[in-house]
Length: 54
Image (cartoon, rainbow, N blue to C red; front, side):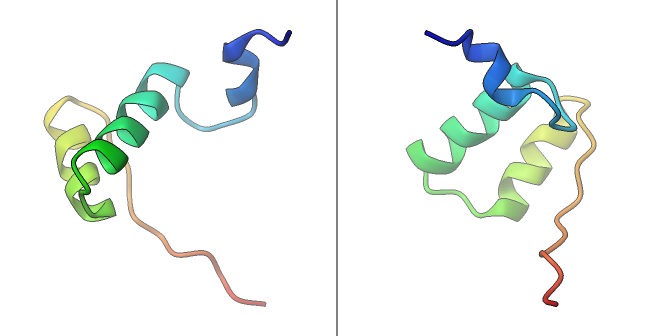
C-alpha cells in the first residue's frame, strides 16, 4: 500500500493543509472562498483561481 503522504507529492501545499481544507469543504459544506478565509486566518495564503479553459 502507498504511503498516504505520497498522494500529495508535487502539490503546492503540505498534506495536512490539503486534508484540513478538504475536510472543511465536505463536512461543513463551505464555499472555496470560505475555505480560503479560514486557511488565511491560520497563516496559509491561498488564492482562488479557476482553471483556464483552453
